[in-house]
Image (cartoon, rainbow, N blue to C red; front, side, top):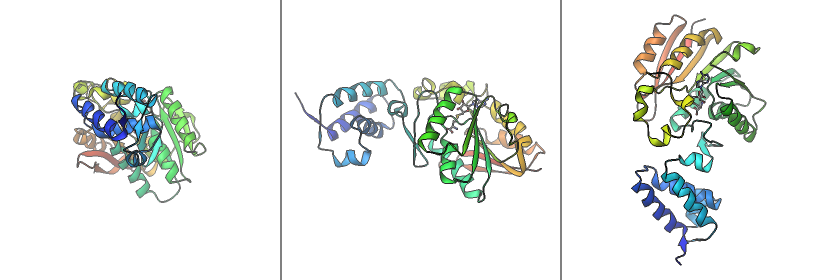
Length: 287
Ligand SMILES: C[S@@+](CC[C@H](N)C(=O)[O-])C[C@H]1O[C@@H](n2cnc3c(N)ncnc32)[C@H](O)[C@@H]1O
């Protein structure tokens, strides 16, 4: 029987994934094999000529099948990197996206003093935890409507040892926050669900069949949650406090109209993602 080496397995699996139309075929092949062999990708490169035997080989085969059924790689390996930190993820939470790092970097780059931040819709906790790890004096309140997501976020908070900095509450947008002592925040941030149910067929199978619906969709046009956040935020912001939201690729004009027609905001700017698409709105409260 043939003995497979690491490089042969990576190359065979890459071709197999490509035949299923998986765009990140090579990366996924490497991540899967790294996971099975419990090595990081650098170590995998160093061990390219190493033979792989049973039981690793049969586990790898099973996981290849799972990925070819379009289960996202991050759910298979239960891990995703965000802001150079590793987060546990599973089907209870959205997989953090690279563009969302711009939200975290913008807050870290703009706020130089201790502050209190409210994150709405924390999911895996990636945003709140990245802020906490980078700024140990900041206090963060993180909410989600999904108790299952909050369980994942709490697990990640423990992994990154920032339990003291983050308070988790569960409920619909600001509803659980009104019961807390801190009613006014320096920043309110959110990567809310913003896909319209009308656009469901534009999503890949990986996303639409695996990621939680509550993390993706916000009404027919996708603006339901963003609109509520823009309306309800001013009551919870300190004077000149900031609201920063991630938005959909085609929502910039509508979101600008919502902010500019609301007298509670004194100014705003639009921030693009790395592809140059308007992806975030950063607004400053008047009072
Ligand atoms: C797009 S995901 C973002 C998750 C995470 N912050 C990230 O960037 O990876 C949106 C999150 O908002 C939560 N959510 C949806 N509707 C909500 C609501 N009405 N109130 C609070 N959270 C909500 C979802 O459960 C989900 O975790």
